[in-house]
Length: 113
Length: 117
Image 1: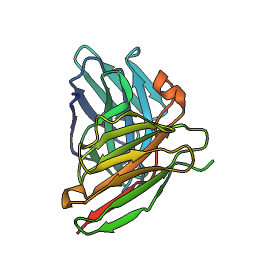
Image 2: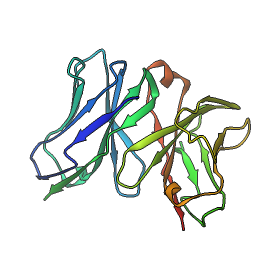
Image 3: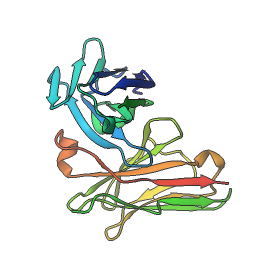
Image 4: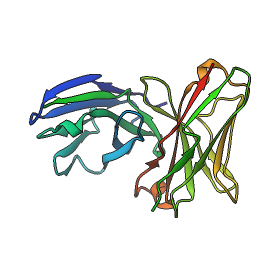
């Protein structure tokens, strides 16, 4: 089955700095790679996703890159703000079934004012 | 437009009791998915259902766990004879049919946190 590794597990940055979170996956059939933000006790919320037919996608301060050959994808947050503080999860679909997501263990991002 | 609604938000059970978790998908969504999140772990897929049909239950434990999505009413995840290892947050998600065809996204509910004493 799919295995998703995510690092770092914790990340602390100063407000205004950039944050980068990296993930690797094992299933070469994976085609869908979403990123979720989860605040304490809240629901996971999709912040950006990328499908295997593109290498990069950007939405304002958030960008995701995908390298299918190397089987890794990354989340980039620029100009971080305190409200970006949360746990971020990467995920990859399994066997091409985009509803069957395998999540990484999460990165606790803390943005210090 | 109400989001995915789950209840109860918190549930405490003693070992051996039954737990029932309910999920109402977003309006217009006919596909429901259950995920489990153990402490300090990512979510893990359990089951995918459409109305009156289990489409994929490859992530469900073989015993004690069952799920349904009846023609009327919410989807229900049922755990019989709970054990301490069942303590987790159980998240329901829903999507429109187009999601499985590579469009759209999964919308998660707030989760039901089960504690087994």
